[in-house]
Amino acid sequence: MHGYLDIYCERTAPGLWQEPLNTLTNLGFLIAAGLLLRLYLQVYRGRHAQGWDRLLLIGLLAAIGVGSGLWHLTAERWAMLADVLPIAGFISVFLLVFLVRVAGLGLLPTLVLFLLYHAVNSGVQAALPPDFLNGSVFYLPTWMALVLMSVWLAYKGHVQWPDYAWASGLFLVSLTFRTVDQAWCGTLPMGTHFIWHLLNALLLYLLVRGLLQAATLRFR
Image (tube, rainbow, N blue to C red; front, top):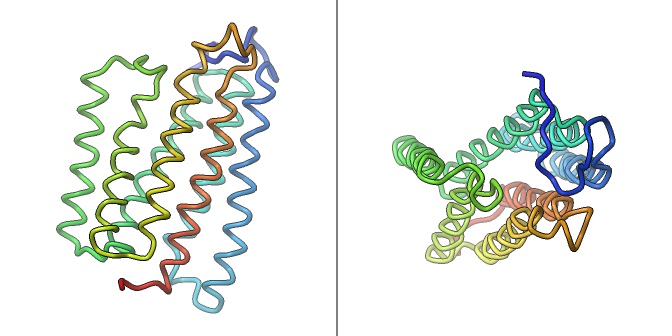
């Protein structure tokens, strides 16, 4: 599980703190988690058990910041798992919370759509090389799922559909910065991966905040 990996523009040598921007911008995820925790305590005051799934997402958001920070701090293989696992966990939990809490689907359709997402995700990653789009292929099914959420909410007339539409656009922009990191090394020696962190911290904050607000929202 040990071994140095150099896959980002900013890193030019092994060792700690060789990616200062990529490391420090993970504070954005921790700040987002802190702000969401404060909002969660306000929304679910006296009835915290009702929002346990939102609290889980907030915890996973904080774990993303810690795991990604360790990964960019050390560039070791073990730290890559600390980076990837919380992200995968957040995506899965968010999808389930959306299907149940926002879409209001029952157990069977929720299970079918959840498994369908993971089947498509596995298929896309199996069909395309792992370095396709600088590794951003891992996130393409998630972006597509977010777009479909936006379309479905718009069709249903849900008051939050514009938020999800904007989130889809923001995710596409952040994915672009993640994808061009290596390609722009000659122009920007610090790379663009740190922008991916900052935009994603904002994106996940907006999505989880929307779930917290959805506790009091209804379809028009």
